[in-house]
Amino acid sequence: MGTMMIARTRDLLANSLVYATLDAGLSTLSSGESLPLDVIASRLRRHARITVLTGAGISAASGVPTFRGAEGLWKQFRAEELATPEAFARDPRLVWEWYDWRRRRIAACRPNGGHDVLAVWSRRFPSFTLITQNVDGLHERAGTRGVLRMHGSIWEVACWSGCAGSPARWTDEAVPLSEIPPHCIYCGGLIRPGVVWFGEALDPEIVAKCLEATRCDVFLTIGTSAVVYPAASLIEEARRRGAYTVEINLEPTPASAFVDVAVQGSAEQVLADIDRRLEQG
Ligand code: OAD
Image (cartoon, rainbow, N blue to C red; front, side, top):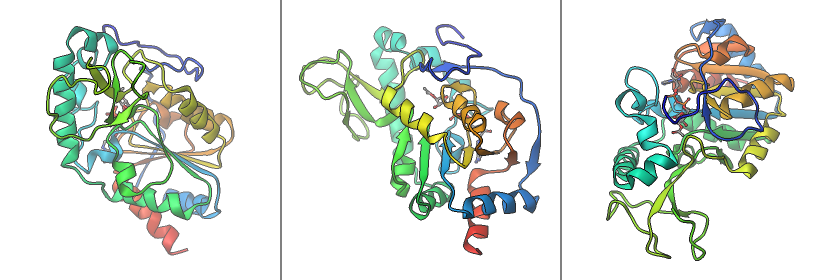
């Protein structure tokens, strides 16, 4: 995989973005079986401390492309040419063209029922944390409170050279961008997307908050392939700390083998089914 780091590390302290391949063990249940959903609803109903980790699968029904799988972005594009600091240094125009295309695509998407259920839960449950690897901003647009964005936001930018006059990052929602590559309004140099690229360190404050949120009663991992670290290690950490762990995904992932229950189904459908059970009390 070129410059992208491939690792089997599960060490949260090694908090730079890495990509891992693990063999998936299977212990999944179909969402057609109602018992696991009843059990999940009953766990949630106890007003427990709830933490949710989402990945690209939660936004799939909105029309945002995922990264892996047959139609995934990494089937069409090479991560090392578009999502690393080296790639940006080599060809900022190419990288920005790709991000401008993604921004235009995401701008045309709306939050789906899965985002909506999680937004409602963020207000309903007194202790609820949503951690996302997504940069699309759809959880925020659905009205979810206190989203922890591990990989930044596609709607933010930062000065590439980190000039003294600029904030660490700022919002820029221009679609399409008025120039490619765009320039820093403070120093005139290049700006970069406000996302975390492979090989870069994650914001240590966010990582600390995510780690803290693994100290919970119920931990749901939804629509993520669970192969990018440190996000994937949060599932293991929650399990280690005694949380009841639930996976919702269209297909098995490396996390399926060790979560308490792996529900195979679409996030929007399964979340609606669980929410209906919660509503029915
Ligand atoms: P992936 O594209 O790797 O995985 C998406 C997961 O969602 C897969 O496991 C699918 O089976 C599942 N899925 C797809 N549609 C679904 C649906 N409707 N309901 C439920 N599950 C569904 O995306 P992530 O795991 O989010 O990082 O990828 C993690 C990181 O890798 C991303 O943040 C991105 C990427 O490279 C960077 O770009 C830095």
